[in-house]
Amino acid sequence: MVIFLCGLQLLDTFKLVSMRRVLRTLGIGCGIAVLCYALNTATLDATHVPLAAWARTGAPILEETAKAFYVWCLIRTRRIGFMVDAAICGFAVGAGFALVENLVYFISLSDVGWATYAVRGFGTAVMHGGATAIFGIVTINRALRQATGWRVPTLGLGMAILIHLLYNQTLWPPVIAAAAFLLALPAILAFVFWRSEEGLEKWIGSKLDKDIDLLQMIGTEKFAGSPAGLYLRSLEKTFPPELLGDMLCYLHLSAELSARAKGVLLLREMGFPVPADAELAGQLKEMAFLEVSIGRAGKLALTPLVGAGHLEVWEILQLSDG
Image 1 (cartoon, rainbow, N blue to C red):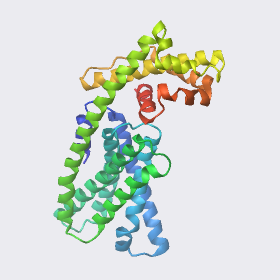
Image 2: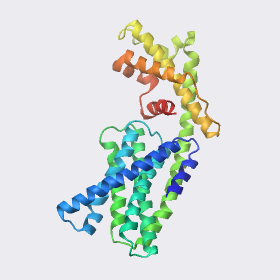
Image 3: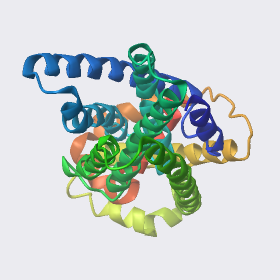
Image 4: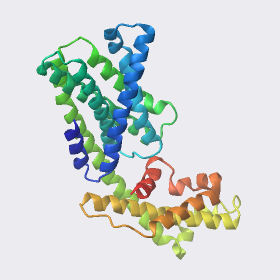
């Protein structure tokens, strides 16, 4: 599972998820497994529900919700932008969870044969990684479609819980269940990587052209007659001149940082090292100052020009995290 996870990270040509984040997410998955083990044990002791019944009903709901919560936090804070990084982070959480769970199986099932342990271990590990990866893929797609509130993660969480519930039922032999996951998961992730990188390339190309055009027009006579310039002039009755000046600076800096973020992604795709930029920290600090200066109303007014969707925030965070 860990080797497969490293393979996923290497297949990510844009390197959206650093190895440091993969390892951190793997460790968090281990911590979630320890927490769920304690909660499952406490629930069984308090309710006296048979272990087999809890494993087929309550445990999948508890465990998938706990794993999904961390991935949802990454999506909500714009640390995940595309299906590729959602799949990698989701699979990393599941792989970390499976590492601890398989260790528990190894200790508690010492009287069973190696074949039984291998089937149970591999099947459960793939199920945990695959279920959380699917949650991440479905949820990031809903987030990119501008869905808001509790509706964003519910569909993906329901799918992850359903996968776990079906796996834990005695409807089919464990060997068949493990083989099905081992065959289906690589195919699903291969399709996700292809679609995600295709979408990322289109987004970079179209958005980069707009950023460059805007940067070239700002400060020239053409800008006043451009759609962006006319829109800013329409705000003269709403905002004072000094605030409009800060809004123009924010627009210019946002376009510059946006273009730089896409340049970094292109360098990563071509395998070139990304050099450190001494000016970046100052520009990010200036952008934070301008956000405070123009306030919430100013940012909302600039949304048609700058955008405030999931990807617009994500690309700036890519620079700050880099």
